[in-house]
Length: 239
Image 1 (cartoon, helix red, strand yellow):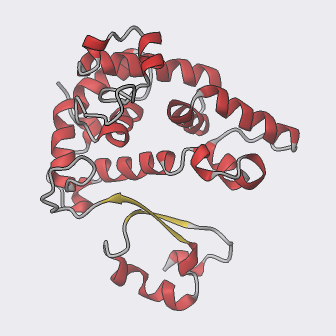
Image 2: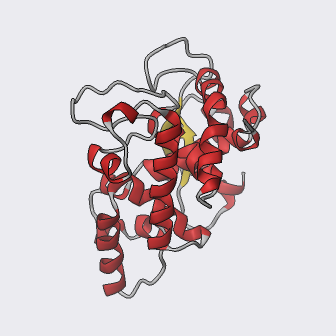
């Protein structure tokens, strides 16, 4: 109802697919003519999916598996003074907490945080460490600590660190320089997204849907009861 009343030309981003509570929630919005302003990330699959294929499992399976590893991830991030929630939900978006996901490409990303081989080596991960959740988490925490140092410790700047984790820091710096040349001094992902047509016409280069999916995963993980999940909020779990 609130979205329907908004006078501004903004978009509403939904974690799930059409069909996932779609008919009930958006019936009035469809009638109001704002349906085209709703974007679906397709992040949330059916809660009770019986599929065992990666990225096709149900929420109960995914978040149940995450509850086993989230405390270890949180501890690693906190030890490097990085907010635990960043690590907990990055791992969710990257691998859905498969500790050793298979990759069709022999030189593709590896491990819980889906590091590129180059980044893995930079943070001291050897091939034998690719499926080691503890070492992956420590490397990811150090990497995010470095990115936050580069792009700012303000909460609004964390989105740039997330984006950099996904597409690389150099690419983000190029976007920021381009925006500054156009007189835009705000430094966050949402500003980049807003001005993407002039900065990076290819939206996929801006980490879509990576950054919004991170927030979708966090919303689900921190308010599990709203999604009929029995797991506690993931950042509250301790080893």
